[in-house]
Image (tube, rainbow, N blue to C red):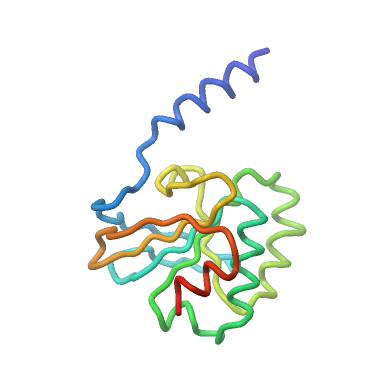
Length: 151
């Protein structure tokens, strides 16, 4: 009973958390990737690709598999994923080891910062930045949409 109450309260509070919008300045965040290496999300970035589900992550992975190893860094793109909903044992023993096989970095957002990233159900978030200010946010679904966005 108490768990249900706390869960309901948490969901209610998270609904009021301020996510980034067009015109917002991107805060400087230090985020670890799947290799436990600290990375910075800051004004140097041009684009942030954000996934909140496994399906979205698979779509991004399939797109990046067709790109050069340095595609993200060369183009000032950060790929940020939310795996906070995954049970810690699953992420530690299965998901993270699998992610370490990828030839690109995935910044793994924590519970404190995940509400910053705008989401639409079952869609990948693409945030375009100019000198640290968000100039566009779009939500896409497919590998083809990603290819069209980054052509």
